[in-house]
Image 1 (cartoon, helix red, strand yellow):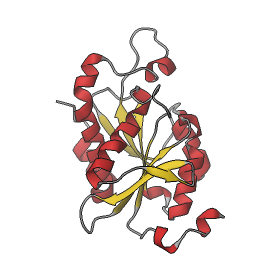
Image 2 (spheres, rainbow, N blue to C red):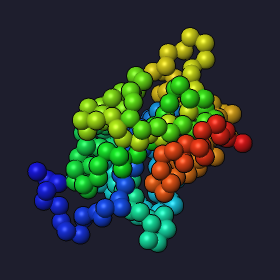
Image 3 (tube, one colour):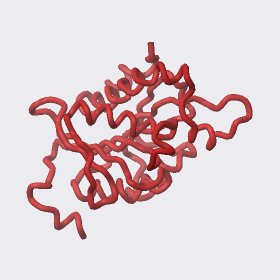
Image 4 (cartoon, rainbow, N blue to C red):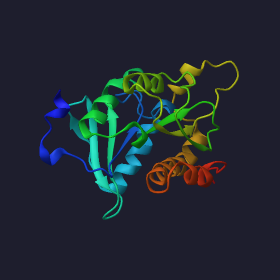
Length: 207
């Protein structure tokens, strides 16, 4: 297997975490609600001074540490579509030797209001096909999730259409703070653990 042949310098220490931002490829989708996970990952990449580059698993990867001596973060965006996220995530987990409980997936969440962040580990996919595919590929749903609220569509608008549209004008004003919160939440999961991070972020709203 390719992950058994990785170079010595590619190996990651036991303090490493894999953080995945979900989304779809291409300019058509980059500003849509469905890509908010990748937007938050860009914030994290800026913090660690990382630059995304192609990886043999079909992803773009950036590596670094938020602070000297801190845990190493492997940030990843799949080159494929949301619904096929599982293969790249599973490949990266095997390549870097990261177990499911040190994988964080940042994704859009219809069941959470736009101005909120929710954190959880495991559980169902709630109809989110990206999460469904990752759980299937990993053989477990017990990875951590940063659920970035995008809210429910207004009126009778179809949910699938809603998440594939750009944020509204009022949302775009608040979006930078929401993305910072999502990045903060991912860092808190790494540094503080799930329960403490939940206490910090649940119920918080973008100001």
